[in-house]
Image 1 (cartoon, rainbow, N blue to C red):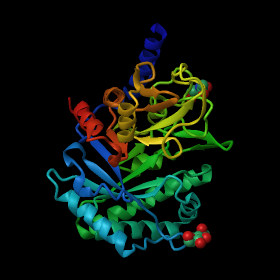
Image 2: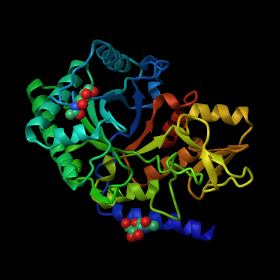
Image 3: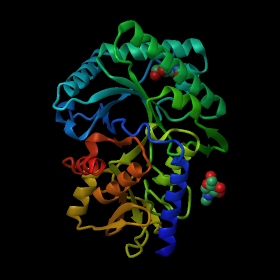
Length: 376
Ligand SMILES: *[C@@H]1O[C@H](CO)[C@@H](O)[C@H](O)[C@H]1NC(C)=O
Ligand SMILES: *[C@@H]1O[C@H](CO)[C@@H](O)[C@H](O)[C@H]1NC(C)=O
């Protein structure tokens, strides 16, 4: 326990050291309480959203044509977009709406081709701006997962620069407030995948984006069925794959805290335990548990726990929650772990938080607690 406290203490000291010197001129910027809305969720229309709990909602997702890089919006999508922006702007209170472009696994080579040349970047950003304005959105978000090498990371920087320039130009000529521009990014600013080192282009990102949505989740999952894991833990005493490490890496690399928004998962990852009596974090497993590829959304986790009288454990060391019943093990975030993470984000001067995804909550339980925790 003592060493654990020391680790917490140490990470706070490190972050405070990084924070010092940047001042708090930006402390008055309004918090971001964001969430992505999966446009394919047929049972969760925008009208069902409790907007008192959020400030920004992202329409997930749009993709441009993979050859022309222009957005071609079918009538059915046009109706969804229009309904989304209109409904959320007319709610009490209203929230800002952004279109998120891309998504997990959404044709990364397309983004690479588009971003590699000034001409195609121009076509893409102009078309994106046109779509946002046409349907009355407040901003645009890019979720390219992920540029695959240093060259593509550099092109990503060029893309954000061109995009911001085009947004400023458009705002000036139309005399409208400039569109917001944000990006969903990996939990860590630099990483090694397939033996290739990559680092996000922090300089053009901090100069041209309003903020980044850091995806602080999916640290563990069905690709490793040998052991259970906390997929979104705040602290990991044994590795750098943790939210505290990832967020600190962005700040250390120069991203201002007021442009960093912490991602929170409204879903859990499941495993099948090798031995139901050995059921902690990292316990031996033999496969995934219930859910599509071992994923259960939060409302399903709640249902599972109730139905199976699962044991629920909040793990203070990692700041994560898990439950188990029989041979099923689920790692997820509940109101406890979410509240602690939000305290962490506030203490380090971050801009706010966002959820993937809004429709996964259970009767607004976590969204409500998160909003409250940020405000007090
Ligand atoms: C573009 O998309 C079409 C339709 O999905 C596909 O057949 C084609 O191979 C794609 N082209 C490229 C260059 O990826
Ligand atoms: C964690 O990151 C630090 C600094 O980036 C590095 O020196 C260290 O080797 C990493 N530790 C592990 C376990 O990956």
